[in-house]
Length: 292
Image (cartoon, rainbow, N blue to C red):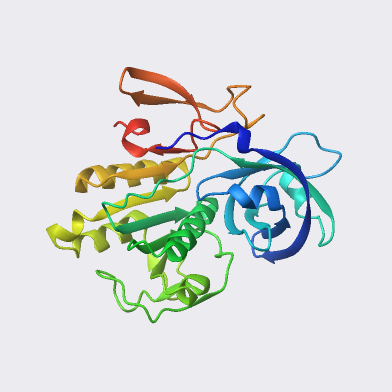
């Protein structure tokens, strides 16, 4: 994977261009931040100041980027004091952010079938990666599965794009991906209409089993979500012999590698090492962080 350079991390005051609110205290912010947007890649994040009176920042994954218009889009859930303050910010207000930060996903062009798996607040990097794949037109095709145990924070619609191994009754998709002609399906245990009733890894397993052996050799998996989900994704990838990159979620303080508060154990060529999720990651080879 490519190295991330802290020379491309910018601090800027961005204007809130758009604010969308969804059920269960979920929000999407579109922020004018042209320096960040210029270099942002899927899997990277920003470290945002939730309120001018609160010094501690929060790491938020980048969901969408417009290089032309100079904005980044962030999806988050208000779960603590900081994000609750961020949820009160209004269109036109200024918000300070640092970014883009971290090691991004790296597309494997030798495996042109990209399976993107996002769970909860791990959904944004998958949307960002799907949009990059769409725009690059490099021959890579994405299939996106997303899971959530709260109402999905985006418009859903019945898909017209078939997905191998998936019942026709499982038809709910992300409207934006449908617009991009990227096949997607949703998974949950909450009984939502048209949504796969089970874990996202079960949905992915059904899809993989529907492929022939030659097709399986063309698959690479990219994933972000809660740690238990990522462990299950890593195990699934190992069972099918498929390369897998995961973006880890971790508590952070400085987010630029100085405090070492977000270290995880990683298997390297020379043995075990402690790596910082913020700048050595957040994207890692799944088999180097989930070894059991």
